[in-house]
Length: 95
Image 1 (cartoon, rainbow, N blue to C red):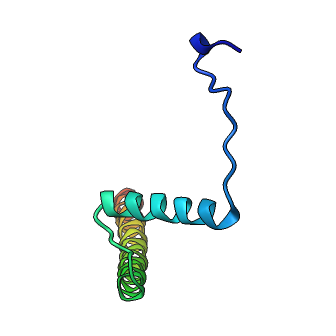
Image 2: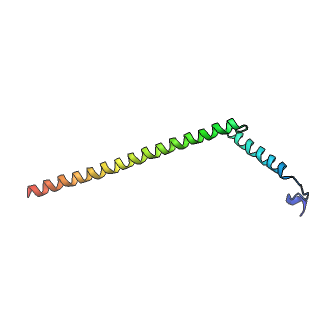
């Protein structure tokens, strides 16, 4: 391939340790860029707890939303049933 295509004809060799270090550094930089430092073990433990806290909050929110949703459905169906019962009573009793 030519130089115009953006292909680099050089071959680089790295050891497994160098590759691991490069990947680890890239991951740490990516997490730092989003505001989540994970450089040492304490930071990773805190981040893990933060994620657990968010998961607990999400599960609680989902449970509340589910309960509210069921309540709205029950109240709506009950309201319709009551209206239908009143209408039947009015029309059946009048006749």
